[in-house]
Structure formats: C-alpha cells, structure tokens
Image 1 (tube, rainbow, N blue to C red):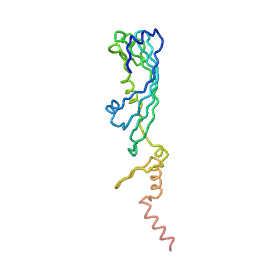
Image 2 (spheres, rainbow, N blue to C red):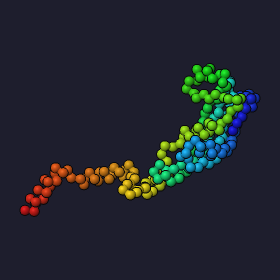
Image 3 (cartoon, one colour):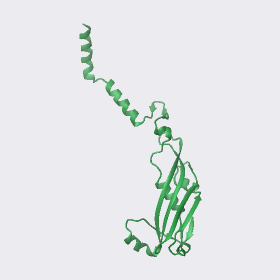
Length: 186
C-alpha cells in the first residue's frame, strides 16, 4: 500500500483508485496485545493529488477476534471503518495547518505515501470498549463464578439488592415485631 507522490501527481487531478486485501496481523498484534486474531483487511478507496497534498479516502473491512469483556472467551468483531486523511508535503505543512485548522494533516515523507500505519492506527482507534458475544448480549450465557464470588449483570445485581432490601427488617423494629407476635398469640 505504497505509492509515489509523482505517480499520483501525474494523474492531473484524477483519482487513483485502489482495492486491496492487506495482511497486517503481525504488526497489529505487536501494537495491541488484547487482539487474539485478525482477518485480512479489505480496502477500497482513492488517492487524489490536490495542491501539494494527497487526499486519501478509503473504507476498510476487517474482522478482529477479541476477548469478551465478561468471560474472556474469543468473540469475532467485524469493523467497517471510513477514513479521510490529508497528507501534505513537508514544505507546505505550515500553510495547510493555518488554513485547515479543523483537519488532521499528516506530513508526507520520502516522496511517497504509505497507508499501512494509517490502517493500523484507524483499526486501533475503532476498537470497541465492550465486547460481548451474542449470548452475553441477550443475558443467556452463564456468567463466570468461583469460590466465594459470582459475576452478575447490572440488572441482576439491582434485582438482588431490591429483594434483599424487602427481606431485611430494620433491627430497631425486630423487637417490636416479636412483641406484636406475642400479643397476637394471647
């Protein structure tokens, strides 16, 4: 996923379209230890030379295998990521930074554009915070438990607390309840 600036510039304003499957598994696993497995990344997009900069617009489709947030069992997570980035020749960085303050500007290096790092960075930026299997989402899966501990969903925990609150008698009223029970018997 590497092109020379000259190659893109010679298209005279026409977009360079690309469609590739990229294997970034080893690089991605090096940067994020939580990832268990990665499919090849399917990438479709265009590169367009625009006044000393290159605009990269592409879509990535990848399936990651991540540990479940609850049970640590492997869960396949599909990601569809849309990317828009502008790469600017180093001599024009200051000009673009002033004119495009709301845009992320990436310096071009060595007269070429390489998208591999961008692909990895965008996948890492789009990792979900919570990963659950379909059974876990529907609260069907058994939650882990051990010797003296049990994992509850928030709903189950709240229901248990409500039940305990109803069953618990205020100790100050326990003596009164016993006295009332004695009066009822007599």
